[in-house]
Image 1 (cartoon, helix red, strand yellow):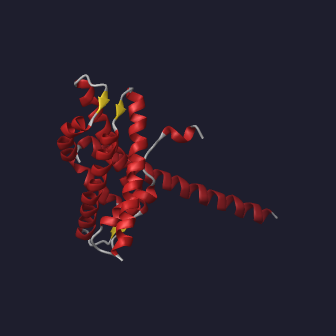
Image 2 (cartoon, chains in turn cyan, purple):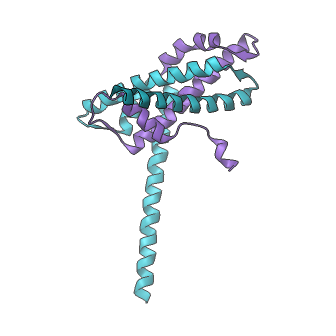
Length: 121
Length: 81
Protein backbone atom coordinates (compact mmCIF):
# COMPACT_ATOMS: atom_id res chain seq x y z
CA UNK A 1 0.00 0.00 0.00
CA UNK A 2 2.96 2.31 0.46
CA UNK A 3 3.31 2.22 -3.34
CA UNK A 4 0.20 4.44 -3.60
CA UNK A 5 1.82 6.84 -1.19
CA UNK A 6 5.03 6.92 -3.24
CA UNK A 7 3.05 7.37 -6.45
CA UNK A 8 1.15 10.31 -4.98
CA UNK A 9 4.39 11.87 -3.84
CA UNK A 10 5.99 11.37 -7.25
CA UNK A 11 3.02 13.02 -8.92
CA UNK A 12 3.31 15.98 -6.55
CA UNK A 13 7.01 16.32 -7.29
CA UNK A 14 6.24 16.26 -11.00
CA UNK A 15 3.57 18.94 -10.57
CA UNK A 16 6.03 21.12 -8.67
CA UNK A 17 8.72 20.53 -11.29
CA UNK A 18 6.33 21.54 -14.06
CA UNK A 19 5.22 24.76 -12.36
CA UNK A 20 8.82 25.66 -11.43
CA UNK A 21 9.90 24.99 -15.02
CA UNK A 22 7.31 27.40 -16.39
CA UNK A 23 8.25 30.11 -13.88
CA UNK A 24 11.96 29.70 -14.61
CA UNK A 25 11.31 29.91 -18.33
CA UNK A 26 9.35 33.15 -17.86
CA UNK A 27 12.07 34.66 -15.65
CA UNK A 28 14.80 33.52 -18.05
CA UNK A 29 13.01 35.20 -20.94
CA UNK A 30 12.63 38.43 -18.98
CA UNK A 31 16.36 38.51 -18.23
CA UNK A 32 17.51 37.07 -21.55
CA UNK A 33 19.43 34.26 -19.88
CA UNK A 34 18.64 30.58 -19.76
CA UNK A 35 18.37 28.60 -16.54
CA UNK A 36 19.86 25.16 -17.10
CA UNK A 37 17.71 22.07 -16.62
CA UNK A 38 19.78 21.13 -13.60
CA UNK A 39 19.01 24.49 -11.98
CA UNK A 40 15.30 24.07 -12.64
CA UNK A 41 15.43 20.58 -11.13
CA UNK A 42 17.41 21.86 -8.14
CA UNK A 43 14.94 24.69 -7.51
CA UNK A 44 12.03 22.26 -7.83
CA UNK A 45 13.61 19.82 -5.37
CA UNK A 46 14.43 22.61 -2.91
CA UNK A 47 10.88 23.97 -3.13
CA UNK A 48 9.47 20.50 -2.51
CA UNK A 49 11.64 20.05 0.58
CA UNK A 50 10.87 23.57 1.80
CA UNK A 51 7.16 22.68 1.70
CA UNK A 52 7.87 19.97 4.26
CA UNK A 53 9.32 22.60 6.61
CA UNK A 54 6.46 25.03 5.89
CA UNK A 55 3.82 22.35 6.45
CA UNK A 56 5.30 21.19 9.77
CA UNK A 57 5.62 24.82 10.97
CA UNK A 58 2.06 25.67 9.90
CA UNK A 59 0.76 22.61 11.69
CA UNK A 60 2.70 23.50 14.84
CA UNK A 61 1.40 27.09 14.83
CA UNK A 62 -2.19 25.92 14.39
CA UNK A 63 -1.81 23.34 17.14
CA UNK A 64 -0.29 26.00 19.42
CA UNK A 65 -3.44 28.09 18.87
CA UNK A 66 -5.52 24.97 19.68
CA UNK A 67 -6.81 24.73 16.09
CA UNK A 68 -6.75 21.84 13.67
CA UNK A 69 -7.26 24.07 10.64
CA UNK A 70 -4.30 26.11 9.43
CA UNK A 71 -5.35 29.76 9.01
CA UNK A 72 -3.92 32.83 7.29
CA UNK A 73 -2.54 33.95 10.67
CA UNK A 74 -0.32 30.87 10.64
CA UNK A 75 0.91 31.74 7.15
CA UNK A 76 1.72 35.27 8.29
CA UNK A 77 3.92 33.78 11.02
CA UNK A 78 5.74 31.64 8.46
CA UNK A 79 6.69 34.80 6.57
CA UNK A 80 8.11 36.56 9.62
CA UNK A 81 11.83 36.13 8.84
CA UNK A 82 11.99 38.71 6.06
CA UNK A 83 10.34 42.11 6.57
CA UNK A 84 9.61 42.58 2.86
CA UNK A 85 8.06 39.13 2.65
CA UNK A 86 6.04 39.67 5.80
CA UNK A 87 4.66 42.98 4.51
CA UNK A 88 3.82 41.36 1.15
CA UNK A 89 1.92 38.50 2.76
CA UNK A 90 0.06 40.81 5.13
CA UNK A 91 -1.01 42.95 2.17
CA UNK A 92 -2.11 39.89 0.17
CA UNK A 93 -4.16 38.76 3.15
CA UNK A 94 -5.83 42.19 3.33
CA UNK A 95 -6.53 42.01 -0.42
CA UNK A 96 -8.21 38.63 0.02
CA UNK A 97 -10.35 39.91 2.90
CA UNK A 98 -11.35 42.96 0.86
CA UNK A 99 -12.33 40.75 -2.11
CA UNK A 100 -14.47 38.59 0.15
CA UNK A 101 -16.16 41.64 1.65
CA UNK A 102 -16.87 43.01 -1.85
CA UNK A 103 -18.29 39.65 -2.91
CA UNK A 104 -20.62 39.59 0.11
CA UNK A 105 -21.80 43.13 -0.61
CA UNK A 106 -22.49 42.24 -4.24
CA UNK A 107 -24.57 39.22 -3.25
CA UNK A 108 -26.65 41.07 -0.65
CA UNK A 109 -27.16 43.88 -3.20
CA UNK A 110 -28.49 41.40 -5.77
CA UNK A 111 -30.85 39.87 -3.24
CA UNK A 112 -32.21 43.28 -2.24
CA UNK A 113 -32.94 44.37 -5.84
CA UNK A 114 -34.60 40.99 -6.53
CA UNK A 115 -36.85 41.50 -3.46
CA UNK A 116 -37.97 44.97 -4.56
CA UNK A 117 -38.74 43.68 -8.09
CA UNK A 118 -40.90 40.88 -6.73
CA UNK A 119 -42.81 43.26 -4.41
CA UNK A 120 -43.56 45.51 -7.40
CA UNK A 121 -45.31 42.60 -9.14
CA UNK B 1 -6.12 33.60 -23.51
CA UNK B 2 -3.04 35.78 -23.95
CA UNK B 3 -4.04 37.57 -20.72
CA UNK B 4 -3.86 34.26 -18.90
CA UNK B 5 -0.07 33.98 -18.93
CA UNK B 6 0.39 37.29 -17.16
CA UNK B 7 0.90 35.37 -13.95
CA UNK B 8 2.54 31.97 -13.90
CA UNK B 9 2.50 30.24 -10.55
CA UNK B 10 1.25 27.25 -8.61
CA UNK B 11 -2.30 25.96 -8.77
CA UNK B 12 -3.97 26.14 -5.39
CA UNK B 13 -5.05 22.49 -5.63
CA UNK B 14 -1.39 21.50 -6.01
CA UNK B 15 -0.35 23.64 -3.04
CA UNK B 16 -3.12 22.21 -0.91
CA UNK B 17 -2.16 18.61 -1.72
CA UNK B 18 1.53 19.40 -1.37
CA UNK B 19 1.27 20.82 2.15
CA UNK B 20 -1.25 18.19 3.26
CA UNK B 21 1.25 15.54 2.20
CA UNK B 22 3.61 16.71 4.93
CA UNK B 23 1.19 17.24 7.82
CA UNK B 24 1.89 14.87 10.69
CA UNK B 25 -1.71 14.63 11.90
CA UNK B 26 -4.61 13.40 9.77
CA UNK B 27 -6.96 15.97 11.28
CA UNK B 28 -4.86 18.97 10.21
CA UNK B 29 -6.58 20.96 7.43
CA UNK B 30 -5.71 24.03 5.40
CA UNK B 31 -8.18 26.94 5.22
CA UNK B 32 -9.00 28.44 1.81
CA UNK B 33 -7.27 31.71 2.67
CA UNK B 34 -4.19 29.93 3.98
CA UNK B 35 -3.98 27.96 0.74
CA UNK B 36 -4.15 31.11 -1.37
CA UNK B 37 -1.51 32.84 0.74
CA UNK B 38 0.79 29.82 0.62
CA UNK B 39 0.37 29.72 -3.16
CA UNK B 40 1.66 33.29 -3.24
CA UNK B 41 4.49 32.48 -0.83
CA UNK B 42 5.68 29.53 -2.86
CA UNK B 43 5.56 31.58 -6.03
CA UNK B 44 7.81 34.15 -4.37
CA UNK B 45 10.13 31.41 -3.13
CA UNK B 46 10.65 30.08 -6.63
CA UNK B 47 10.99 33.58 -8.10
CA UNK B 48 13.60 34.51 -5.50
CA UNK B 49 15.53 31.30 -6.14
CA UNK B 50 15.51 31.89 -9.90
CA UNK B 51 16.23 35.63 -9.88
CA UNK B 52 18.99 35.38 -7.27
CA UNK B 53 20.66 32.56 -9.23
CA UNK B 54 20.32 34.65 -12.36
CA UNK B 55 21.89 37.73 -10.71
CA UNK B 56 24.72 35.54 -9.46
CA UNK B 57 25.36 34.28 -12.99
CA UNK B 58 25.22 37.86 -14.30
CA UNK B 59 27.75 39.02 -11.71
CA UNK B 60 30.10 36.28 -12.89
CA UNK B 61 29.56 37.18 -16.55
CA UNK B 62 28.13 33.77 -17.33
CA UNK B 63 25.68 33.34 -20.20
CA UNK B 64 23.86 30.42 -18.68
CA UNK B 65 22.61 30.00 -15.14
CA UNK B 66 24.05 26.78 -13.73
CA UNK B 67 23.75 24.79 -10.53
CA UNK B 68 26.89 26.41 -9.12
CA UNK B 69 25.13 29.81 -9.21
CA UNK B 70 22.09 28.35 -7.48
CA UNK B 71 24.32 26.70 -4.84
CA UNK B 72 25.93 30.03 -4.00
CA UNK B 73 22.63 31.79 -3.31
CA UNK B 74 20.93 28.85 -1.60
CA UNK B 75 22.13 29.47 2.00
CA UNK B 76 20.83 33.05 2.11
CA UNK B 77 17.61 32.00 0.38
CA UNK B 78 16.87 29.44 3.08
CA UNK B 79 17.76 31.91 5.83
CA UNK B 80 15.37 34.47 4.37
CA UNK B 81 12.50 32.03 4.43
